[in-house]
Length: 141
Length: 64
Image (cartoon, rainbow over all chains, first blue to last red):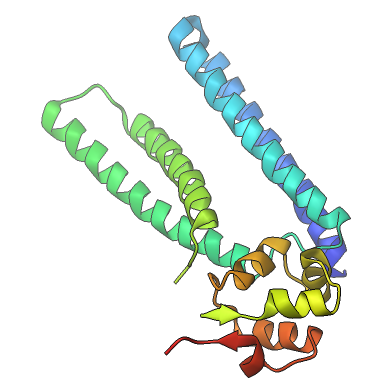
């Protein structure tokens, strides 16, 4: 399979995974009864909307590159992703630790699944923020 | 670090897209290389030099 065909498969896979994540998030919110609360419902749909916009932006950029005969990924974009992923992973670990300590000390009603979910969401947000930051950085060194 | 990428691109009437397509990278990578803000790998530096019909030493200028 040549590079262009591989890139097309990646774009399709990215769109498929993004749609699956968004659908799962909405279904989880609906079936968990969270949407009965208007504030939670609004927050859920805002987050899903932002995720959808990000997916459209990234997917559109990838499609434009493929149409222009340019690669979807190159050494610079891969370095940006690696730096963003490694930094956001560390942030995720610290967030989980902080939430766990908070629950133990304050006797919070947060469950283990809530801590995991909040940490994953925080990690995802920090990844997007780090990716945007490193994309604009003049130097990656 | 400074580069002569923009100067040599203009000499051969090449756009950033043309050069990016020739060496197999994204246009943004060429843009940041021209600004001297991105340190490419040795292979990429060599590929760009070959595409611009010059050498790596002529293309990248390091300020001592």
